[in-house]
Length: 131
Image (cartoon, rainbow, N blue to C red; front, side):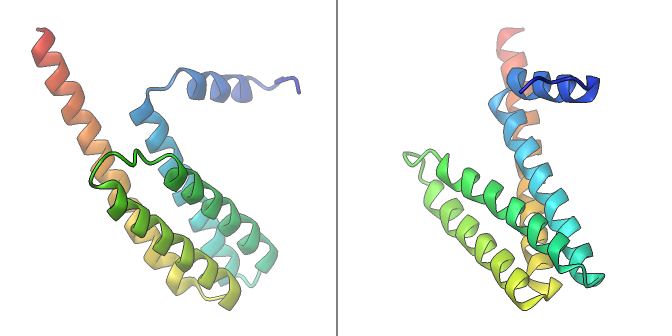
């Protein structure tokens, strides 16, 4: 497949050159965006849109879970949380009820902010060691 749009070229370049921390934040951003679109679909009784977007969010959560570093002690906690978030998204999709998706969205926003802060601290710490 050939990339033709300038935006697609930029996005492809941004992903291929991003640091692991930046990639993680991009995954969180995508999941958050898809959950918001899924909630909007449910609210508007557009269940096809809800199903598509909640499914995309679940795929991202599955990818986050699959790429956990299992050697880290926190990974078991994150795995349980990712599985719960996936369950909430599935429940929201099946029941056509935005409440579980909103709960999942809250967890993801909090996790995204935590990782954003941690990556800033890691960069600052690394910068001080080198300087």
